[in-house]
Each structure stands twice: as C-alpha cells, then as structure tokens.
Amino acid sequence: MVDGATFSPILPTYRPAVLGTMPSVYQLLPRGRHECVRDSAGKPIRDLYDPEVWVSHGWGLADTDQDGVLRQLLPDVAGADDRRRIALDHLTKCLSRARQFAAALDQPATPPAEARMHLFAGDAVLTDADAAWDARRRRISMTRQAPGDGTVLRSSALMDERLAGEWSPHLRTPIRWTNVTFLFADHIGLTSSPAFSDNVLYLLLEAP
Image 1 (cartoon, rainbow, N blue to C red):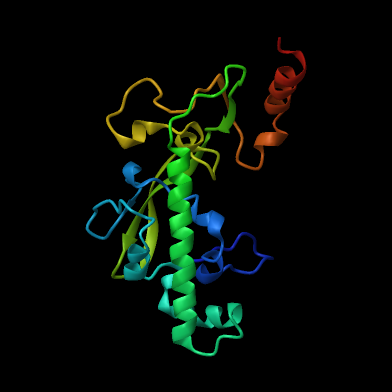
Image 2: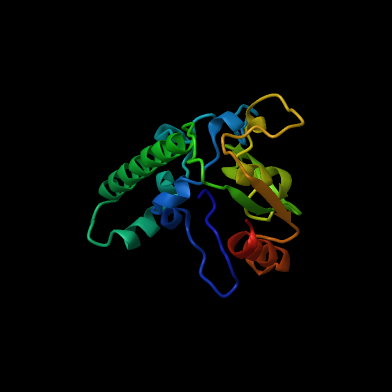
C-alpha cells in the first residue's frame, strides 16, 4: 500500500493508489497494540486506522505523487485538487470501516456448545512480521520475520495475543480452538498438502 506490488513478472505492477481503493486491504492491517510498524524514531505507530497518519506520511491514496494514477481512476474529474479530495474521502471511509471490522473481531464471544474450531496453518516459512517507516527516504522496510506460511504469520492465524504483552509459554487467544494443526507448507501449498486433506476428510467423514 506504500510501494505498490508486483505479483508476477507477467502481470502489471499495482500502484499504491490502485491498491488503496480496495477496502478489504485495510482490514488486513496489524493491530496497533502489537506494535508491528514503527516510525523513523523507532516509536510504534499505534493507530494505523488514523487517516492523518496516512496523510502525514504520504501513504497510498494520500501520496501526492499518485495523481497520474488517480487521473486514470477518475477520468471524469478534471482537477487534481478534486481528485485528491475524493481519494482522501475514500481513504478515510476505508480506514473507518477497517477499524470497525477489527473491533468486531476483537469482541469476546462464546461459540455455540456444538461448534468445533479447527485451525490448519503453516509455520515453517519465514514470514514478514515487523516494518519500519523511513520518512526521509520515504521507504518502508521489513525489519523482522517470524514463522508462518510466507503470507500469514503463525501468530496471526492463531490470533496470538502474546504479541501485545509479556511472553508466556502458553497461547493466549480469544478463539477457543478445538484443535490446531501446523503444516510444513506455504500459503498456496496448504490445501494441496496430503496432511491437510487426510485430516480434513477424517474430521468431516469419520470423526465421532
């Protein structure tokens, strides 16, 4: 959302302003309490849902260099000021919605007695975990990796709240997992793993 993304050599590069139009991308932002993103002074950026943070750093739709992209996205809007106003309005709405989404996920809840919660996740691939923003160079860089599947962190899959405070040997999560199975596969390879299909078929067809 800061640098854009290229997913394959044969696919076009997605510019930050293009990615910034997608509401669901903001819903993937890490919680501020986990202190995953830090500023140039090394201080955690605690509220990634604050539009002023995006405007002050010039991220995504708030990047003033993205007007050429905005001109393509908004061909009927003649002026750069109007395009920026529309872009920042969309950014604000997406961040507000993402904040509501995260707050809803964080609400404590008791599942129905008959519900069983099974997690299959990868934890054998180093996955980007923390980032730092260099305001002078206007660059964001990854500073730490942790176990995951190359896309999703093990801690994110578990909703591990040990990231928010002092470490403990036992998992702290609001989700009442019935069972957790870790696979030695990356994000795309999880569902093609024989261990995944064997265990899922057992749970669906044979388990009492």
